[in-house]
Length: 129
Image 1: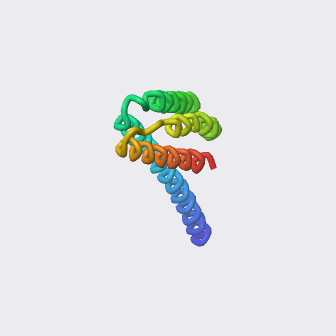
Image 2: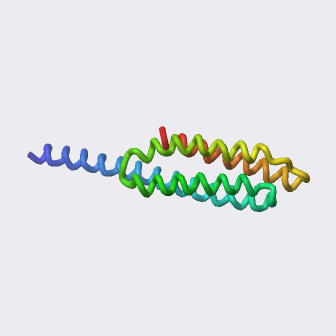
Image 3: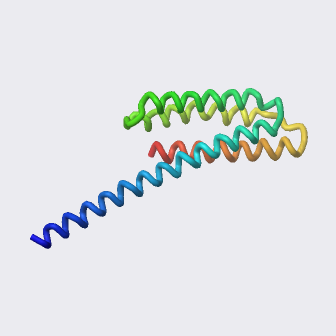
């Protein structure tokens, strides 16, 4: 009887540990995603008024993802929305790519914004997978 109880306790401990590890990973990915979105907005703000369309597209994507997440809270359908959000996210990448920098500062901010948007896309697909 002691062997059965010990085996069950070990199995339950591993199960709880696995669930906590999964939750912690998801929580860290969401925090990184949020931080990168804020940083991308700040980079585009530093670029100047020419980045207004890209910042508007960024806000549209965020509104779409936040409203979908609130609507589907606790549902596995959130992950399919991440896939659809990736298509919308590509519009931000296209708008950033279309920017025409006039000086070295704008070139720097454009390159950093492109890098951040690629990282955001990677995180979205990682969460989807």
